[in-house]
Image 1: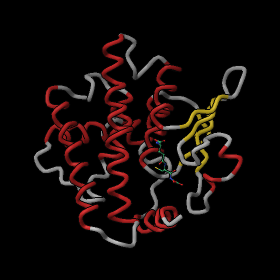
Image 2: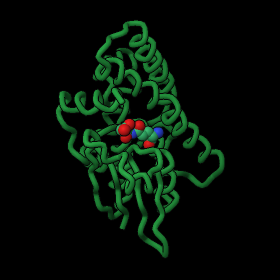
Image 3: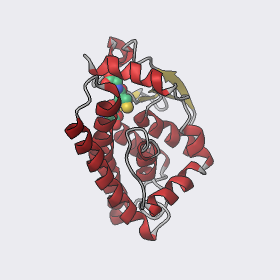
Image 4: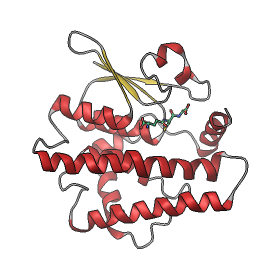
Length: 220
Ligand SMILES: N[C@@H](CCC(=O)N[C@@H](CS)C(=O)NCC(=O)O)C(=O)O
């Protein structure tokens, strides 16, 4: 059994989707970010970064904790031998697009969310910096998807890492007009039963509540 620590945010949904796609058994632990449960000592022993998501794999002789959503996806893919090719070049392709999400789309769109919704001061130059950079990254994804159904041909952890962020494009106001391949891929992802299930575990609170939770986090 895998213990899965999460909250209703894009990085958490990645892992929920992977667990559902891989039909792995897991126990769900929803952390209350507003109550700062992610900073409690017991959780810092699982994820020293004090953020969600994290997993603890209890199968096998020893318990094994994994933090960082991208590392969790790789761990689950390797554990099951699915969603990450073994051929060196195809594997590298998936890891490149996983890194592109982890180092680019996630952090940049995360800052767009923060400056559009969570910060009390609305700073136009900062907002346009992150929203425009996110749009630039979206265009790169759109180009990659021009001649294939999924980012790396076959469905993989690169798609799982990317979709929970992209599907929230409208929240910070990222324009996807003209990004037809990306829109088609979003629809394909949303129609996969396991993506739809995992993408709603746990249920997302209303936007007002999310803003309240994150405003309290960024203020500290
Ligand atoms: N690079 C990390 C980012 C994790 C992260 O930023 N998690 C957010 C939710 S999406 C969080 O736990 N925020 C609460 C906090 O900062 O205290 C990952 O991909 O796992």
